[in-house]
Length: 106
Length: 93
Image (tube, rainbow over all chains, first blue to last red):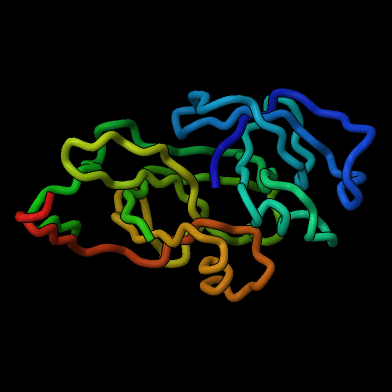
């Protein structure tokens, strides 16, 4: 699962059967510091997000599972939550490198 | 499964029913010395982990559905363990 920032909406008049009625949003995947990662993508929305919202997205088969009722739809990115609060420790707070020998975390 | 450090918490009031009453955590994969950092991602907590904990994450939908006991859950990453220690053989590359 990953973060995404909603940038706009996408409208398709002709689309594959089963995807009628799905709301499509243009999103920019972002990392924990809200910096863009990769290019813009289109996600199916099930939480009624709007432009500017920071969302939680899910990829691959699980995106199709997030759709209401019909779950065999060709969807590979879905918005599943709207972020209200994000609390992330700054870089350098934790040691993210595994050293040779024993690494104890307790 | 991968090893990662919990670096943050996420609060969502509007979310998919499968995410209701579940904690979402921001996690950063651990790397070996000299390797580049991976991108962070979000995982569902199943072990009462908190910020600063080193955790074991199942990053595959089938396993996640099994752990959460919901055959339709739209969840990929689940924290399935809190790591106490990791030993890496000094002879390995």
